Image 1 (cartoon, one colour):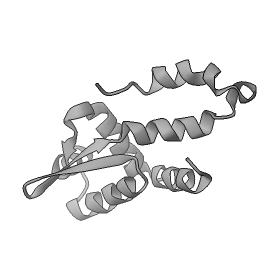
Image 2 (image 1 turned 90 degrees about the vertical axis):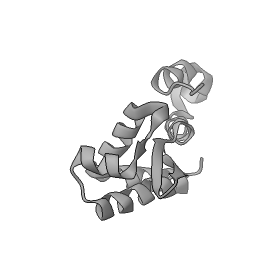
Image 3 (image 1 turned 60 degrees about the vertical axis):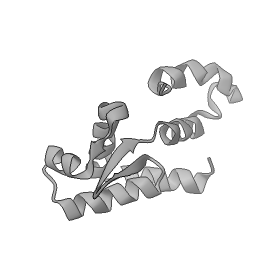
Length: 111
């Protein structure tokens, strides 16, 4: 991940609603959530929710799947892993393997 992509991701997460949304989607796991369900859970109007989901998607932090007229959103585990790896690539004196167990404990692989 280059610094421009990381900056886009951090910018997306710098707004409380988007951070709450991502945390909610992480909690939802593999089932994800419909955009309307996210808006209801966070008490946010649909157009506001759609805009914020688009920003998270553009940042690579969420993925989406069309289901008829609805869109289901998921936390992008690979996007989160890349972002955390970017932060920690020079940890432990430039030995990123030393931090791998920390990354593995924070972001689990989806099976």
